[in-house]
Length: 78
Image 1 (tube, rainbow, N blue to C red):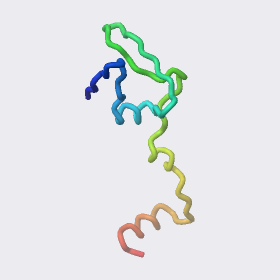
Image 2 (image 1 turned 45 degrees about the vertical axis):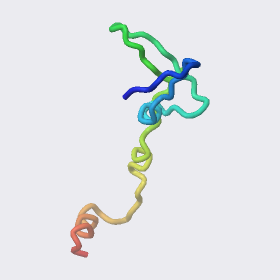
Image 3 (image 1 turned 30 degrees about the vertical axis):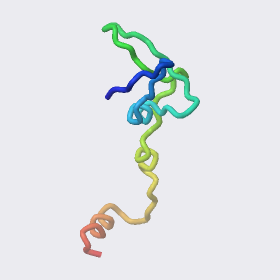
Image 4 (image 1 turned 180 degrees about the horizontal axis):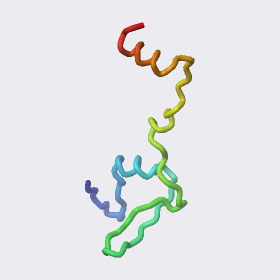
């Protein structure tokens, strides 16, 4: 992934990177150098990336069916 630097020194952070770090308009970011001399981008507030939209749904389905009943339903046996 790459991005061009504008005449004002600005760079658009690619969407996959923004999504990974949970960066939205107004989010402050830090630039630091690691032991290899590479520049690392991270959120300035120290928070981790948002959970994926699927992670938020994990465990949210409610049912009175047993596992065997659910499997039978998925197999078309009920």
